[in-house]
Image (tube, rainbow, N blue to C red; front, top):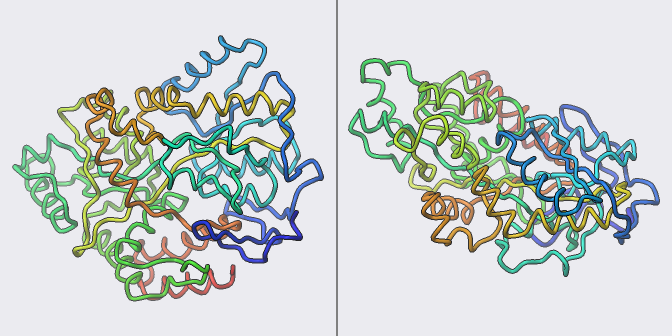
Length: 435
């Protein structure tokens, strides 16, 4: 129960600690619950069968999610699943899920939870503990599996993982006679070379998701982590104000200042940059693997490629570990059906389907070595290496406050309105105030 939990907000690795009295809030709205009603018991009662809902962000796969759900509905006509799509934006998805939980609504049964939200949703008892013995699969990548744990208990079962990779316009690099870059300096040189070509003088260079939302937290974290900086240590102490973190942020600021990162990307979320990339207005794009399927449809394999993100000043790039987990709402009336659906939705068959139809990064390790999958998706070894080197965002019960503080400090810096030193100092103060 809430009164038994240590009063610390940050969780590192398997040594997880949290404060229920500090419930999360984000810029789109907050939550002030220190625990829900008595119905949010510590042990779930997986009874009740019948119709349920699957709740996720906007489906960008041209109906492939619904097609998979249709297969379930054919198998289990008395336990039909209805797809509920939320916003395409992570911040708004989170707020919709919180609003549903705070009103104790049974409208949402199985929900898609960003892996960094697991601690918040578990601590507030918005999702139920899950039976590990019925869901554990030794083929699930261990670091991905651990994203579903809170206080040593499983609250979210991963169904899609994520790590950022670099999409590049193969046709433009070939036209300029440039090899695929592996370092940040080579990225800048490649941009210069392509811009020297007639018709490409104004092409955007290296894009990312730099609008003031969760994408900015992911992208800025990568530059800071790559330089050797960190936000917290293993005990949850704030460590952001370091020469390494300042250097990482300065590299990002300079990218905008020198014109290698387009100023348009200050307003970009995932799909904005993808559209620019496919329209020929961007040379390199830091993005999640799902874009591969879209690029294949819009460009064809002769016009784009996928590579690891570049090293910076001799440091291997540290991508952000993304991904989503299935959680079951404490207010679901049909938890038996919900659990059965989660088992089916995270099966190897479903993982393979999601890879083939949506190019979602699978949580099943063997699929990265499957010869059939490698033939269809030759970038899988690059993606697996990215996953293995990726670093998660801070695991915090008050994650909404943490990510808002990061965005508030970093966004003015990349707009050239403040210095890296001042931005990091501001962030240090904000994070300490949350501890």
